[in-house]
Length: 356
Ligand code: UT7
Image 1: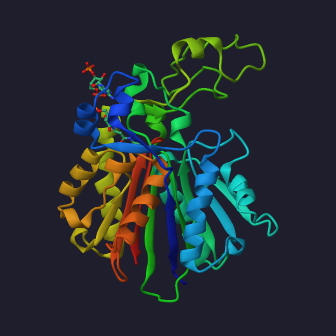
Image 2: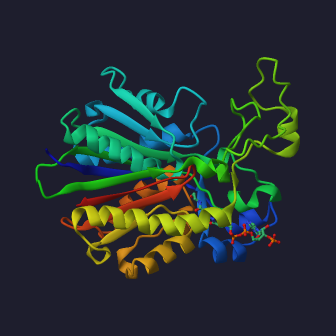
């Protein structure tokens, strides 16, 4: 079976830089708190009414296509990972196809809802399609417009200060060198704690049985025996219950366990060790998480790429943005062993090993 490879990669971040001090001007937070707990110094926000998750993805895609030596019309299949889609439905995959002006070919488009690990899931699916000979040019893209859906009051500060906007894209093609390309991908999930990091409303849950304990929440929905009203209720508005929610410490503890676990799993499969990794690209969730993972794997600073300081956490876009940035900086060379890893909401997590 032929291997697949990343033939071209690109990223896009909006122009507008938002500093910690700017956020401290609108909610009760501080540059000191944010830097100490997360490492973040600034993030980017898209231009409202001009940029969307889809338009940013299109920018990143054009760069990835040109670096892969193809035109967007050559794309055989689109895999789009995001938790901040332009619309509830249809997904961003078809919107990106239209934005790129490539509807004529009627190539398939798939949306991935796996949050922080979305790019890893998307890449793994692309890998399966390419190595089995089904497609030759698969576009894998992660893009997020978080700034449109965050709580900018002090109530939302633990979540809001972390996130930023941006997009990253990769073209996955068959590799002509059997020793180079994607060596393996590992994907996992455990829905036990789905609500620990979630954006629940509006949803079709109706407020009932939101977790396995059968706990119910009063979101102000009409009684059980009526139809309709799955969208935002007055009570949700009053309670501010229509924003993402996170139990940060719970997520943190699991993240530092699962990152090393899934990286070891991939390395074991191909008979390599952490010391063989030339560049680890961890999902940029929190600089403290990346630093702990680095320590647990005994990696040097030059073996790990972090850019959360500049861009915040861009969820599905963070791995491809960081990968692209490291590559552009000349830190990833032909033959290098690159490891991608992510953990987040779901919980879902995964890793990929690539001989570049
Ligand atoms: O990418 C998806 C996966 N996500 C993650 O992996 C995130 C994992 N978790 C984290 O990164 C961290 O838990 C956070 C950065 C989200 C929070 O840091 P923390 O050190 O766990 O803080 P905390 O939530 O335990 O809150 C500590 C204190 C609280 O005040 P009290 O109760 O001690 O008085 C919070 O209200 O810090 C307060 N706080 C803030 N203060 C200033 C929470 N957010 C802020 C803020 N500014 N932005």
